[in-house]
Image (cartoon, rainbow, N blue to C red; front, side, top):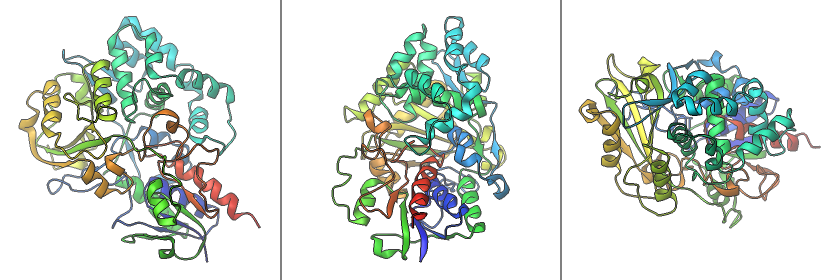
Length: 469
């Protein structure tokens, strides 16, 4: 009998399997797709030689993840590549605010009236960032805080809505960039703890940047899988699990799946009936015959580029997708251009590029024209660079990754108490009604993103059970 079986080979499932194997437990991992990866994959979606990341491409949380930093992933081919700027937010007038590795450069891009306010916001946390990241991403109750005072100070700033936090800024440039940071998790700007979301992304950039993985996000998943095999674990792909009886006998089962999929497989009935899924996204992967012709020079050297004219436009786009049930007329866009740091992604002189906007849960429309109108506002002539495009709305995203229910790439609404207490209001979020079954997906704390910490935290709960006589 195996000690543990893990279902789902996304970053969290892979991390949970690695953490258990590192501690001497026998582990087998099962994945329905033909490759490991989940939200960290790389495929030729458009033309031969153009390597696209179907979901996550820039990795501020991965490079700062306490779980990943403790693993020898570089021995298995993972190499982080850093663009000159982690992120830029261009404006219609051709200027841009930036999120730089340098706090000073970032503050200066906001203008003199907000530079000091931004410094005072982030600089107290940077010397203690590694401890803060570990404490913040290990909650709740998976480990006692190493620095409870700093965590409490962070909570006082971060738990209120982001709109409260941005009141300290006098001009729109800083408010707009910060609103864009919050929108990465598709959370309404006035929601509970959204200030913490923006702060985490900003601090992560200043600490270690927003890099891409050389060759594509698949390199993260492949490194985790290779390390797992070296530890004696086994990986089985093309293996869809429809019920627990499909799996070999084990002392514990760990699911990197959505809560509703787990309930269906394990026979938990309506245990997760109150779990809420959030808005979806409409994503386009492009093959381009050259770099994106951004008007703002800063955007040309940034790995990630946010598109939204101001915080009001961003808030309206989020509100349309999450509350009004319609696609926004001017969608807020998150875009990534890996080629500014990693030219291996496309043939010489060519580029891969992706962009997505928020749409209602399960939406079946086509946002291509609205997305490209937005891109043309900030990069005139963009459409002339397009060699090929691959579009994916909520149905296509859910088909690619079963965890993206209704196109929700966060595997659950990141709003209200569910931002922190997911998938249920519980001090033991990785446990389920069955004492030998656990959940480790992005539906558990600390939530969405490629960081492996949900898997790391769940593994702790599993090995505590396995050590019991």
